[in-house]
Length: 165
Image 1 (cartoon, helix red, strand yellow):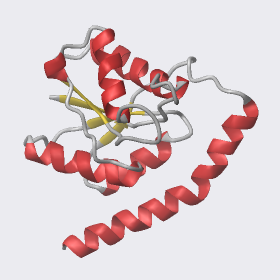
Image 2 (cartoon, helix red, strand yellow; image 1 turned 90 degrees about the vertical axis):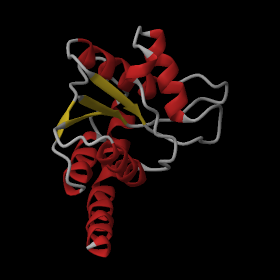
Image 3 (spheres, helix red, strand yellow; image 1 turned 180 degrees about the horizontal axis):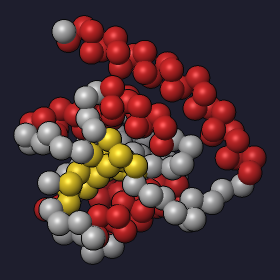
């Protein structure tokens, strides 16, 4: 099995996926298309608008030709850390011990990889490609937002692991 975890992003007020959400799904679908036995794991609970992020992503995957049985939604994650923990539990329940692939935006990828690896999963990135374009001001906002988020979430993940023994 080749699991591809697709980290959630906003759903627009009209229920449509945000551009970031669409890019993440499209990158995952491109990457998974060449791999046998792929399992797409879209993550994300219901936000302020529309359906849960994972449901919107699952719909996009189906629209891209992905078979429904190759999609397993993870609807409980409300942030990156809780999504990683839920995906780890799901994959352990499936008996998966191999690598996992993370599909997200470039600015978010370092945090996702750190948390997945701290959770005990051998994580690798899904290439996003040139379509991950955004305005320079937005790019720096999101990158700077990750600066405190990475050590904060990493510390929470380590605390979680220590509590569980």
